[in-house]
Image (cartoon, rainbow, N blue to C red; front, side, top):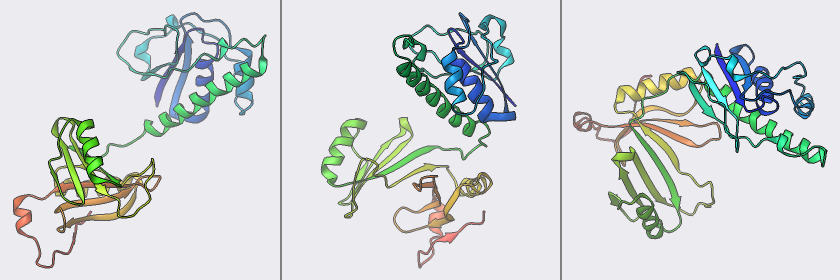
Length: 283
């Protein structure tokens, strides 16, 4: 079970909402607390906007960060934006989520604007906690040695010029259909590919990939993917046409293709079948 402490200045709004949201979202997966460097009281508007989503923090109390020991927690998460955040010394994993203080909007002048600010802060915190919840029990993944990305482009020469400037590197090689940029210092293999008439827009992506180093590592990645519940687009196999690779294709939750691959050794290349048909690997 993870132990999480949320911190802001007054322990009145953001950290109190975070405490309530985390308890609701994480349940018995975590012990949750909150505190502040200058604790006051729980803001009534924080109580109200949390009630709007069925979470009761009316009985919460503001607490001082001085009452807590960082060593008792796995995570300390600070929520200050423009203020000076509390400091809790000690060996602990830290996250900083800068959320604008909704109490800075004067409710005595415009209560609707103040409520809107509290709802915005609440919703921003809630989505961050939902991401944290997805990460807390993530099992170990493949050991990536290189990151690969490919994008489609409408004008190959113009795209090559742009990415040569952006990456401060000429492509390692290019043909009439693609150009490959290699940056070993970034562990990057980046390819721009002609569009082939496909519609291009701001989300255009051909695929992502990681190099895991060996055939056995590709097979191991397939086992990990099955245990994790990842969508397997193509099972692990050795392919010979184009760039010879051991490869496994996954789909991310939005359907983007992800290739987990390893280059063949000279001995493996020498075993290429005459028909160059893929050879499936046992996972």
